[in-house]
Length: 141
Image 1: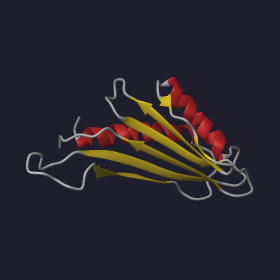
Image 2: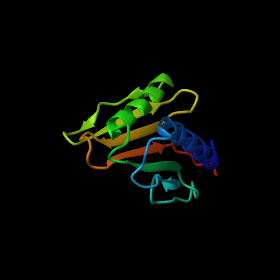
Image 3: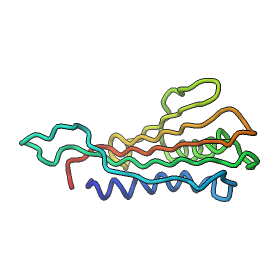
Image 4: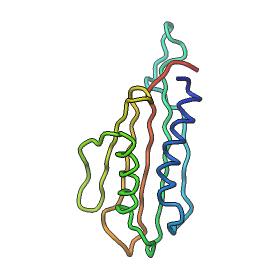
């Protein structure tokens, strides 16, 4: 796949996850975007373009009085990922926040990764939810 194709697919995955909470009140506007990342800082003569991947990130802050907490919003996204064949890593985090990683290597190719990070503590605080979608690496422009 080319970097452009990785970008498009990363954005599709991210947007399908954020769509699960469309209409839920936000504390502020969502911040979302992506960029090309280099796998190795050194570019060698044999491979002047180097290996790179695309990473799409979103930060969503739900309103304190929203109908969902961030962990409930994450549950909706987890259901979509699991239904689509993503495999969950061991959860990480603690009492107030959690991180869940998911991997998939079916029709998407090897190495796709999605991470959800969210607050476990409920309102009255704004509820932060972060989403990262990381593509596999490519050396194709």
